[in-house]
Image (cartoon, rainbow, N blue to C red; front, side, top):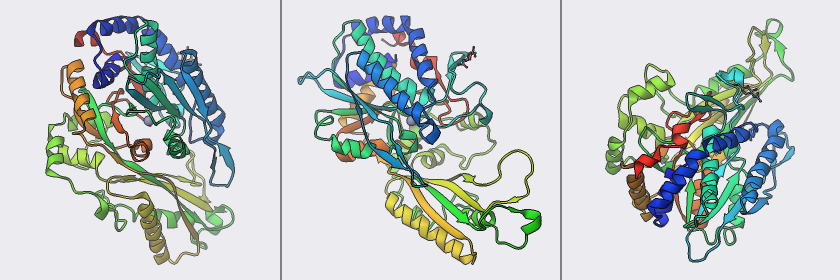
Length: 480
Ligand SMILES: *[C@@H]1O[C@H](CO)[C@@H](O)[C@H](O)[C@H]1NC(C)=O
Ligand SMILES: [Zn+2]
């Protein structure tokens, strides 16, 4: 599906002859619609891992992915990774992890491709121009939830293997897949699975490739770092039931007022995190990093237009990129239990739960952050002398990941991008979280490279997420 990306990787590890590229290019070009149909089928499955009512769809998604790999002759397993416990104590089966193997020639290197097929929630009424689970082609952009994050990239790798098979070309490497279904909620259960299979499935893996990220601009990119994420629930509970504000307003200390009050102490209007200890833990920006950021192609005005704001937090490129990638942020996402429907309701909500998260960077540690945030919120809450009850829980604690850009794998990656695209790769980081990168690194000790396939304007996690045909089917014939 995406031969340029595959070509990069394969060139990292071996040399593939030019005539094979031409043959692959022709094959892929003539099968484009088939690939789009495959993506359409996958996008149609509402595999939202954050919504417990969608769990059957998520299980089906894993089965569909496994079946596709099985039909291609892969050695496929659906690995049971147990259950998750919901906040209400209920247990729910986690989606199985799909593992697959193509080739086991001991004289070849083994590449392991990681991807996920779960998605973020999406509803038409969130502001989508098209049905989020009905892949829609508008001027070569394929709109649909999960199209870019991460279904098309996973399919790209699978179809790339398929193209080699269809042409009876020998794969220059053994290829393994690890496909999970809980990435969007913190990869529950995957860490334990990787630990458990370290000496089996992962024992002969030489390199791990992740394509769960996007380019920064129109220049091809290699990604060498991601932020982690600590996600918190802060619940304030007061009266035993919702109350009428006309009847009871003025007599009770309202949970919502308490909650909004403590939320306002997390971050200053200019973006400074006010939780003690967080900023102190951040690794300082080095001169070398500063220089690298200077070289990256990034247009602030375009960025502003893309997201539709008149002003950004920072006015120069280096500061903006640094705060996008290598400094922590606090984001308040929503309040459960609050009145949020259209219209007016004169309610005093009895229990409200704020959802907020803090993006993690080196050298922050989620366990420490959990304590810092919990202690801080309780101390701020105590000052209010409220009779209501505050409960703070951290529901996701994902560490950041950072690779050495001088590592031979990255050097090879740079050379490969140069050869394929005839331009230098931007070395970028991701503001988002791919928790598994850090786990792969810690547990397997293998080298990891992130090779984005998605475009810079794909709208991940947002309304109108898309994957461009041009990003999937780059006109790579011109590249050789
Ligand atoms: C998807 O959208 C197309 C037109 O945009 C429509 O014809 C088709 O019926 C839709 N499919 C589903 C399953 O809603
Ligand atoms: Zn993703």
